[in-house]
Image (cartoon, rainbow, N blue to C red):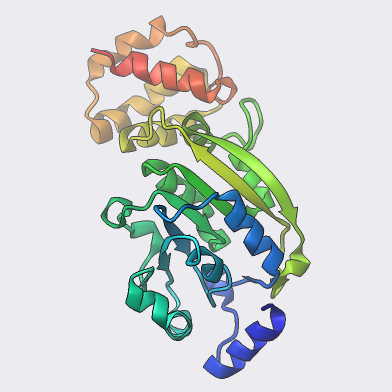
Length: 274
């Protein structure tokens, strides 16, 4: 398996990697086996694979557990149907020609994600994954995006997404992966991350709060909250009277971007407390 097999499939099914879909196929078998090992898969696990492409990673996943593979490219769906006909018939592989950002994890009883997702959906995907009640995600991501994901308070890369993921999970950057492991080679260096979830508040309401709060990240907390309040009243049905609490917060004079994920969660809990 590798570049030669990929080229054979390209000839057989008449396709070329689609840049619009961020199709950069990993041709290094050892990398894919390593990702599977990190996920510590058991037969009882149900794993989501996003953008399985030609099924190079899928092959190792279906040997371990049930797999929900979500592929948007119809040509790749045909490749996968042929390649995993037996696994699909047995129910070991469920192949969906859908948008991975719209999948109902509960419906399919997904508890882990192991994937090399298209890099252009990374932000939306991490938001989606964190909203779900899963235990682990092993992902190959763009190293630049990982810097945002693992940033700490005070850094310019620190965002609402950083805050939302880090308060609900532990992120470990396992290993950098060189461009030469892909065809075609991407414009960036990649890395494998192992995300272990222990949700403290992964609600849609808290995610919405963070997104609006970080629009005012350079303000001190009470000022940022006042500016965010009209939106929060509309979207989260907060009452105008909550503004009285802004001056009682312990971190009221701290810049939003300087507040840790834990501090911001405590601030939110204080505000919504009856």
